[in-house]
Length: 370
Image (tube, rainbow, N blue to C red; front, top):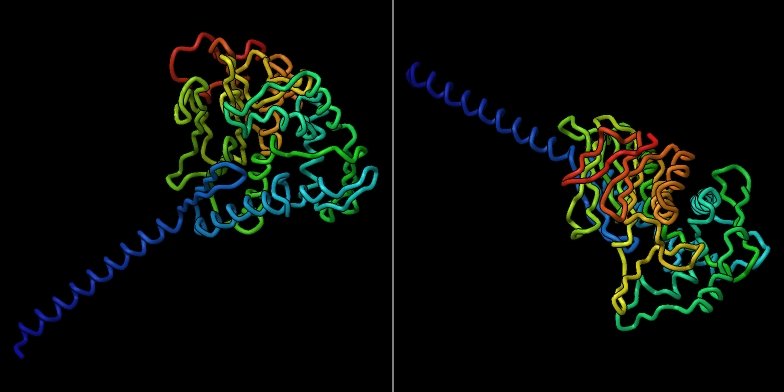
């Protein structure tokens, strides 16, 4: 073979090799880019669940987070699922006798009872008999009947949050003793469960993927958690639903900068579940003080704080309490909020000023006391 032909062949081989290296490199880059961002969707706790994580083990982390949310619901805190720990306790716990429960369940009940006390009973995890009597969560408009005051009072006699106690069984990780003074009292963690699921998912990620998941956003129904940084180096924006619009309509957004530590955002509003009967709208957030749907001058409350269970419970309690009492309760937990009033104006507490972008014309978007 001539020397020139040999050189041409070697040159072609070299170019092919270089092209192969470039292609392989591009494929590796694309694979790595894909591997550092993962999304999952599911259905749990009666709501849509979405997980989006960033980092080298994003896919495994997303799977683990979704698994933890499902496990918490099915095995621990659901009052509806018969096999769950809470449902078993509701069925079998005898009055005055402490029953050993997991640390996970004990902590949820303990935090909820404390919030109930601090909110003057606005959050009441023993109110299930009253909620069932109203039936707003499940009944159709044709089936729905407004309960009588006598029936509501009778149902409320089975609600006894002060009769529930949690006692540590030993070291914190060993669980707790859960006791009720009235054998008919039923616990329902629905008002805090979705936020607590965010806590559980985050704890799982910190335990198994602390160094390999750099950030993410997890949503369980109306509760959302953000932490860390997105793949592009930016932070997160969480929408605030327009209470007068469709579920996808956004009234504004809250900005969370890159590197944000765990923040949980929960929203409660009468627009979420309601029934209209004879021209009157009855929503699902029942005020324990009146045993009727809350009328506090607010149509929506969005709470931001580090603890998911607390953010979830606070959004319900603040909605029931109304603006002035809500501000005092929020301060006890170092939480911030966006309160939408019935007249359409908005109160943004001091810690969120400059971080909330409201769309449309709003008469007032500031906390006068802040």
